[in-house]
Image (cartoon, rainbow, N blue to C red; front, side, top):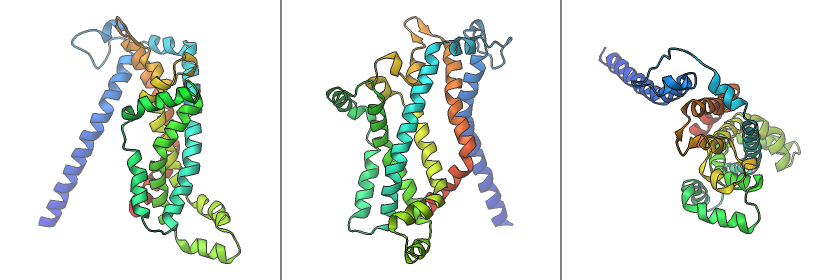
Length: 279
């Protein structure tokens, strides 16, 4: 009975902590949703109300009628898809080599690769800015894709390494005995089995790139090249913040992330679980 009570108490504490963490994340988002549906007078009222007296869609109509919004989304999708392609292409191959090839100093090298993702972006921003100007890449898709790829390749490498280690080497040995080359084995057998790992990596990269503001703000200058987070900054005026449009834009900006996660959540969990067990 004592063990059962202890386990029950432990479960209750865990659920309480998870509930508090969930509330910490969801309450601000819910407040943005409520604010986006309030008339301007209700937004500025004090004390603030969770339930508005009247509901309006005017703020959504305002941002959706702005022709620049579509351009922001197009730019973000181009940069995200380009970064995903580069990071999955390079990170998956590096992760496979890290999982299968044995050589002295491998762990040191892998931790060195991972350490590069821990460098704050603001500390290397001046160097990135100067480099983009000298290479004539400033205010282009290419510079954003290259920088974001460099940031995310270490994460993808470690996720894919853990996933490849969860796949039995006997499958590769059997394919090699049947006459397949190492690359044929990788592309025809291993990569199809690694789809959950690739999906989870793609989701993480998409979220990281879609939400990034600092680098995009400094490496692009024209409105034609601005991405979604930079567009959000445009609602901050000298006279204050347009909270209604700001909130509506925030809600609309997270829709692609939510849709992508809901579509790939099963593979996302499978990929992270496999990587966590073996990585």
